[in-house]
Image 1 (cartoon, rainbow, N blue to C red):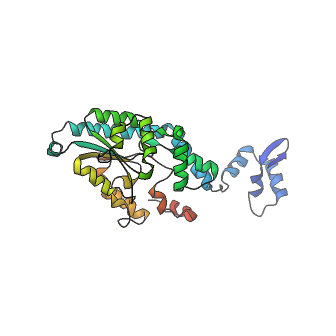
Image 2: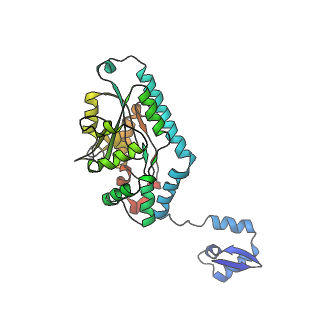
Image 3: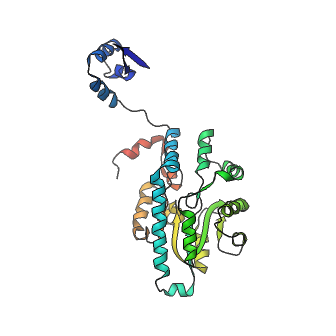
Length: 291
């Protein structure tokens, strides 16, 4: 609503400059006070809290449009590649026993599937496995690559290092996942289809990736892991090891030496295990006494 006075427009929030000031008094005051004073008064009014929709929209827009997101991805891949090259070119007894490998998550690490979040937001839906399956089946063209992912994979393979994909995409949808990876020429059809090989390890009966990481470790020396979720790196970040925000962050600090030297995180402000520890109905509490 806009209030008119002396052919100038002022926001209706002026009427709330003071709880005991009447609307008529506020109108009169708006005619007398300098424009800058009025603007300053409006600026200090309590701002309406962002809705869940607005918060999700901002996160999505940041991921899909910001140069900062792309820069962070490229920074992560460049740093990881430098580590891979240094490791490969440094003599090691481990590498003589088993060949080197890099383990990567898929969604929001290699594949940009933020289009699914756009779909949920536009339809007013919450995540559900059925929604995820249907979207993946019908929207292959909307799946993109995380900036720098394909070049990183090619560069790593050029160093003679095996790349393994460990994802919590269900193994029941294996054909669809293979189709996506083949679309971007990220692996051969034969390697992806090899049930006895160690190339594409999807979720079967548990979301824990530890048994699948162990399978890779049996055959390769893992020199780097990349993911967008702490659970992509170790089960130390899962319950019962951690059951709160503080415990999760403390575990990050416990593994401080691994970040940027063996473990590499891609940015994902949209979803992940971090969301499970948030009390969304009382989110304001996290702005108090921030650490």
